[in-house]
Each structure stands twice: as structure tokens, then as C-alpha cells.
Length: 335
Image 1: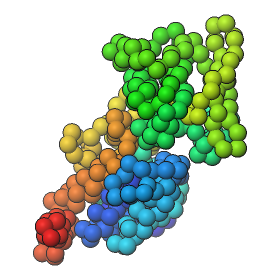
Image 2 (image 1 turned 180 degrees about the vertical axis):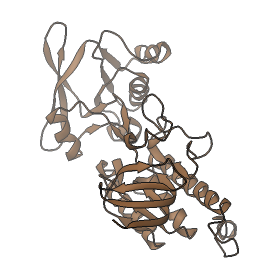
Image 3 (image 1 turned 90 degrees about the vertical axis):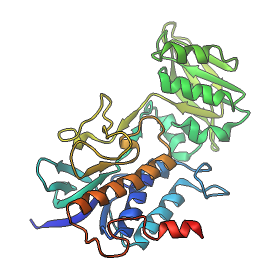
């Protein structure tokens, strides 16, 4: 089997991966990007994106990802189908295998594999999630579309409480479904939602079915898991806040991960514990999880990777734009 050698391998797409590719390509790092099992990442499941700067009238998630991909390709990023199934970071050469077959040796690697939201797994939930008709795992992303309406949110942790409180500022009523008889959240977060007038908390309550029509969600059928009693709740939005799983399993043998599986980076940088391996986007971010923050860390990862390669004298320093991606950007900003 032949081995392909590359200067910069980007694992994963989405705002982080494509932004990293744009910066890496402009720095003559000849990046090769594998899009992964979900090309474009989680944003491809989002119908409307209205909070990404520069899109005055908003944009659909899939359209935005296509534009980012084309921008990366404009600077000769080699965007490929396929996903990395195995890595070996034990030596000076970083190795990765594509689809369990093709072997790549990379001088630098940028991980942009993201994180996947956890869902309840109900057929009705998945139906309206795929339809884009009222099921969401991000209140900050989608809450705006439910202004003045009634919504349901499932979850009991700090994130669920935070998202419920966020929705309460936008929505007429928020019904919070908690499976146990108490929150898992910290006392201060639990107290915040308990004292919010338009949040109704239903303890010992589980979702039986997400209700809806051909347009979208109309409510939820829930069950009290103590009494067994079922009833319907009217709502136009169904939010799930039961956590995220970072897509980092293949790296756990070599990279430091936290207890949830997020990659631990050096604060203020994209550097991991392995020199030459960098992380961007939701694979390391369990706090913000926004497209704009993912794009920002993609930029950071490319800059860090470029400086790493330059420090190893892998990039010639006498060519314009090489060794410093800031060339030509400062003058442009002054115009």
C-alpha cells in the first residue's frame, strides 16, 4: 500500500475545518481536508442561520457550508470525501488511515471533528428533526424563531437550565421536562429556572412522543414515570438539552481528553499535548458550540500549525505570505 505524504491534514469539515483550510491554503500549506461522515457538520441540519456575521438576510446551514467549502477550494484546498478511522500519533510522523484503508503521513494535523448532540431517539423526534420542523438541540441557535410561542425543553443539567432560561426571555411559556425528581444542575442554576415565572418544571416526566403535523411540531405527549399518567402539552418547539458527545474516540489513545471526551487544548491556543496536532471547533469546545466560535478556532489552528511548521524549517521564509499569514491582511484592513 502506498503512503501519501501531506503538509497539513484537516480531519473534519464544518465552520472550523473549512476556516482552517482557508487560512492554511493561503499560507501555502497545501491542506488536504477529509469531510467526515457528515460533510459540513451539524450546521447542515439547520434550516436557518441568522446569527453568523455577514449574512444580512440569513442563510441556510447547508448553503453556508457549501460556500465555505468553495472558498477553501478557491485557494486550492484538496477537499475529499471519506473519514479518518484510525490515527497513530506515537512518532514524529503523524499517521492517519482513511476509511480503514488509505494511509496518510502528515507533518501537521488539525482536528475539526466536532461533537454530536444527544437526542432521545424517538422516531417522532427524529422525523421532525430531519424535517427541520421544530426539534432542536440548540436554544441559542434556534430560540429566536419561537418568539412569543410555547416550547418544551428536555434536560436536567446546567446546560438545560441555561437554555431554558434563555428561551424564557423569548417565549411565552417554557415547559421543562425532568426525568427524575430533582435537577442534576448546580443549585444556583436550578434556582434560576425555578424562580422564572414562565418556566413550568415537570419532574418525573418523560417524553412518549413528539406531536406534529405536515408543517412541524404541535406538542409533546409526556408520561409521569411514577404514576404512569400521560397527557399532551401544546408547543411549537421541542428542544433537547441532554448533552453532546464529542467525536474524538479515535484520538483517545494519544490525546488528553476530559471526562466527557472533549480534547484538552493549551488555554488560548489550539495546541494539544502532541506537538503538530491541533484542535478546533466543538471537538474541544463544550461551552459555546457556535458556528462563529468554531470558525475562530479554525483560524487559530491554522495559524498555530503554520508556526509549528515554520519552526521546523518546513516552510521557506523568504516567500511573500509564507511563514506569516498576516502578510497582506493588515494593509487591507487599513484601506
